[in-house]
Length: 152
Image (tube, rainbow, N blue to C red; front, side, top):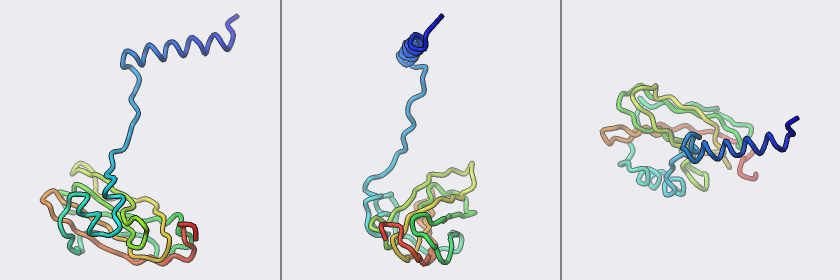
């Protein structure tokens, strides 16, 4: 009869052999720009992401509640139907770090993202669409927070 300890020992040896042969998947790590996420303003974040001065656009849509009851989990989204979008980003103007999320997209997918962000207080939330031709377009929406999510 094979004991549990022997089975685990055999499994560990097999895993070590597979790892040595390159047959196990590598850890998936997200690439991110530290400078962009450390930015305190919209202009600093756009510059750190490699963009030019942003311009308002009706072609960029931002979704989110008018009033968020809990600032720790505020659902927001951004979308555009324009072709040539390479990156969508969400920023919260009054957060200690303005940049909340960045998504790289291609023409093979719809430029439509949704996530939850943390908001310490009522603020403008900005959706950026960074285009392949270098333009940076944005839309903004004010979201009122009744209970702050950053320790409030």
